[in-house]
Length: 79
Image 1 (tube, rainbow, N blue to C red):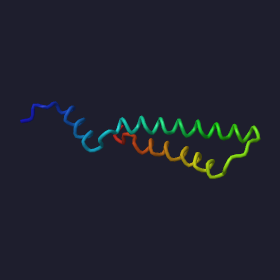
Image 2 (image 1 turned 90 degrees about the vertical axis):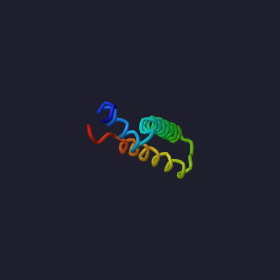
Image 3 (image 1 turned 45 degrees about the vertical axis):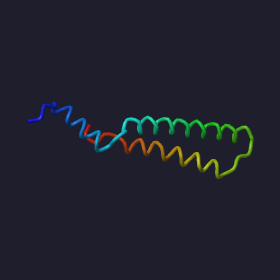
Image 4 (image 1 turned 180 degrees about the vertical axis):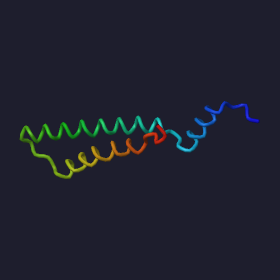
């Protein structure tokens, strides 16, 4: 039979089905933080009276919605 521990085998099988899952989670967190920081800076510019392009504000808002959603999709469903 197999000499590999059943827990290790299960972990390796899980990793082979979704490679680099941990790295993707870290990237989604970093991108989310960057998007929220960019939105905060844009809102502070608006509050100070500077004009910004609406397209840029829309991109920031969409990034603030997209990256946390992608992080949410990466969660473990077994826990």
